Length: 437
Image (cartoon, rainbow, N blue to C red; front, top):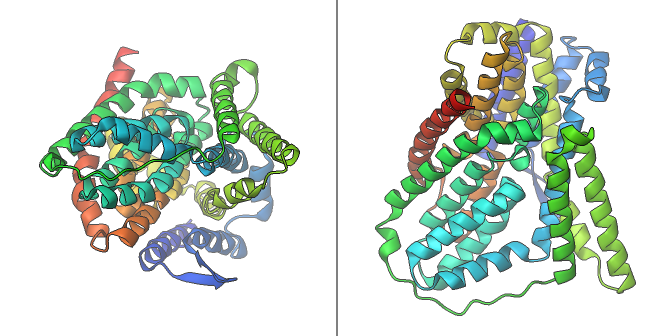
């Protein structure tokens, strides 16, 4: 037990240090961050010293269980590939420009329009994709119209990590925690729509109150116009994405696993686009760019942490932790703990760890409350500090390229306030959800 705990602790500490220092290696003139590989080192250490057997790990990776990490990774990356392809067509930027044009010269209207747009797109795509896509656009937009970017970039990040709660596929943490505990897409939505609404409304009101003075300043608008780069691919991808989401929602009724649906639809989408471009003798760079932009860093991060957590499970550590936390007030306890641990280990490793901890709970009603509270914490915790999610780290780096004075402290200054209020209202919404339905 002790060696497993030591390795897990050292891995988490090393992950935080690497995330803060941002060391990189250069391969073929490309700088590559190495934080995602840290859990793999911990996983190898667990296997080398014999805390866990290779056969045990192999059995977990080939098992037909819904908590198989390979299935979870395939599901999220497949959905991300669809969203990234949609972005490569210029769809997200096109929508943002059109919405801002309709909002006119009022900063308040633009602020509201951006928040709503990002929220809707996040629900049907992915929070990480939306954040990485919209952040550069918002920074450029604010420079062109000469307004303070902070209200817009902070609200973008908050909206994406709030409304990603609504659907199971909105965040990899949702996927892992739900799949590990056998929660279907429909069951997830029916339980989470009310907490998401509470989080969404409270976060928006908080953001508006924080930035209302800055939003009263006039907009010096310059002409911004944009066209869809590839209309055919845009409409095809939208169609596939909507059909895929619908099939995933019906997966428990048609007896098809979500990962299989997502993978099949993604492969079919890319083949369809490839055939159309071949027939039209068009360049296929859009497909290559999409493949390179997929969140492949999830692979070593999730697989490494899964092996480390498996060692904690097999040595009885997670059982002792679950016993220490207790089964009383699971919504409050797991909501707060998951938020805090997301900012100590990042929300993906936290989800891998907590999926096993809540799995030790014997009472099904308590387990359900603990799982959903942890999901809320994994999403809301992302905007408590930049350490809460991989997207938070990339987000701060992107914004800092445009505005040098934007860093960890400014993120925390606003993120902490919004996160605490959203967490309180989200957990209240979850409590009411179990009370009423």
